[in-house]
Length: 184
Image (tube, rainbow, N blue to C red; front, side, top):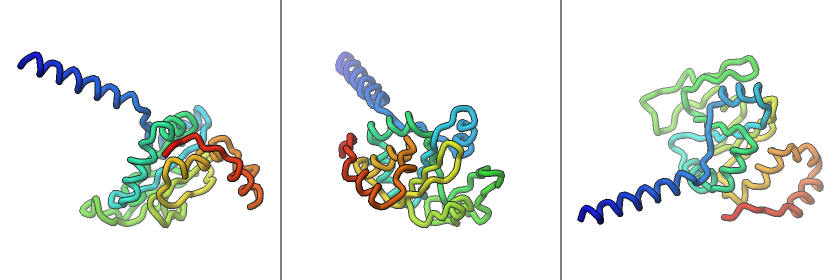
């Protein structure tokens, strides 16, 4: 019986270690990402979510939990997790953003929108927001996306290829010629 228990413990340990080697996104706050940009310039990707949002949880599990998505984000971005109805203080472009009407009794339910979410004009959750290496807003992407759906955006914003897509025709050509590598 002891031997069976020992084998079970070893198997659980191996399974746990295997799960830990799967790439996970190394989330940070917006303040941490902006500070990191001063040392090593890199674009920022922000997951603007709320605690009550079902699609936000699906995005975390299905998309950000995908190994290729996580690996790509970790290599090419400073990834930010931002509760758009939370109480975090954000220092952005010499301005302080807070949520003065945040109600801690509503945790897990709809709360007051954060000033930073309002400044970014985030009106849907989840929203994925891209910033350039200077912290300037590039674009928001509203709604849930699968790994296959988000891949093109991750790649055009990571490598600043969006700067060459100035017309609808250019975007359509890029989109038609894009070869995805992330699987569902």
